[in-house]
Image 1 (spheres, rainbow, N blue to C red):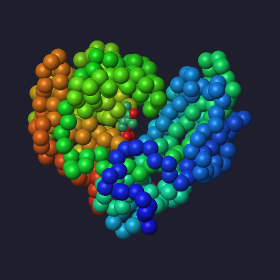
Image 2 (cartoon, helix red, strand yellow):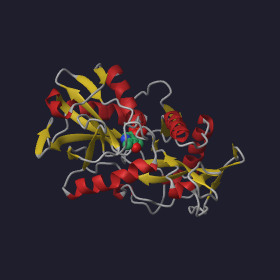
Image 3 (tube, helix red, strand yellow):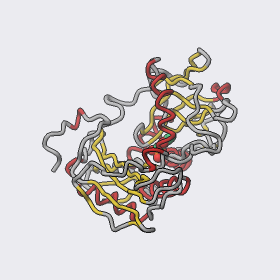
Image 4 (cartoon, rainbow, N blue to C red):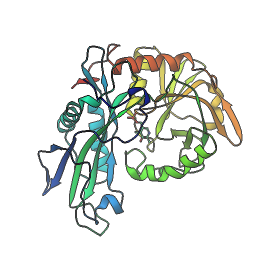
Amino acid sequence: MGHESINWDKLGFDYIKTDLRYLSHWRDGEWDQGNLTEDNVLHISEGSTALHYGQQCFEGLKAYRCKDGSINLFRPDQNALRMQRSCGRLLMPQVPTDVFIEACRKVVAANERFIPPYGSGGALYLRPFVIGVGDNIGVRTAPEFIFSIFCIPVGPYFKGGMKPHNFIISGYDRAAPNGTGAAKVGGNYAASLMPGSNAKKANFADCIYLDPQTHTKIEEVGSANFFAITQNDEFVTPKSPSVLPGITRLSLIELAQSRLGLKVIEGDVLIDQLDRFKEAGACGTAAVITPIGGIEYQDKLHVFYSQEEVGPFTHRLYKELTGIQSGDVEAPEGWIVKV
Ligand SMILES: *Cc1c(COP(=O)(O)O)cnc(C)c1O
């Protein structure tokens, strides 16, 4: 088992053409039965709304190889629900949860040889997406849609272990107060490319976005969610209509409460009150948990726990989460779907 020519230790986060992908079309008011295809090129109308008006959304989730050889999908029902909300916001037809999960399982099973081995720190990353297609030119919802899922093997986010990173506050907004910040749509990402690139040029891992209304509260860390641990051992994460409801964030809220016994506060993280916190981090499917060493704001670097070492709470959350994902730690009810 396993792919002969992939060096699992060298895997990063890069596109690799795997064997098969799921493809389904929506026409005349319904999704077709969908199928797996070898072709990784989409042939769509030049008038597709996805190309002109950003009518598209996507998801990201991972499949993990366990010690016993079985394969875990982590909370795919949550990705299905979120994609339904994104589709609803952009006037696209929703994919039922059971169809979504079954399509994920088919794609993973069909590309089993690309799943990184247990213990390598890698995983099979699944990218579901829905796009508006078909002949069109006016600003309106598309006549047809495509739902597809492809997958790529990805390496561990941190080669050689978790390490704190520094971030810088951006003056740009990624989403408007009542815009599409809570939907996982490409337009938010297009808006984040320049601020993200500027941050990296200045030697930061990425930028942090403040709330678009008052610019006083932390909302997102690049394309990941923010969390912090207060001096009184509380787990804090921002709550706002322009924050993307991450499934890693949701999972950490539940684990902080049930496994670490921390009080959880979903609320404001004022940028001028960072002294409240002894640890901070970014979380997401790709980033897993990225400890935040420091945050640069108005030419001053605020350091949390350390710029070299990972704080104890961050470390425990990381162990718990990744243990559940790879099947080494017992999962809360319903979190794991076997392929
Ligand atoms: C996808 C995403 C996240 C993280 O969500 P997960 O479900 O944890 O992967 C956070 N912020 C933004 C802007 C995102 O697009």
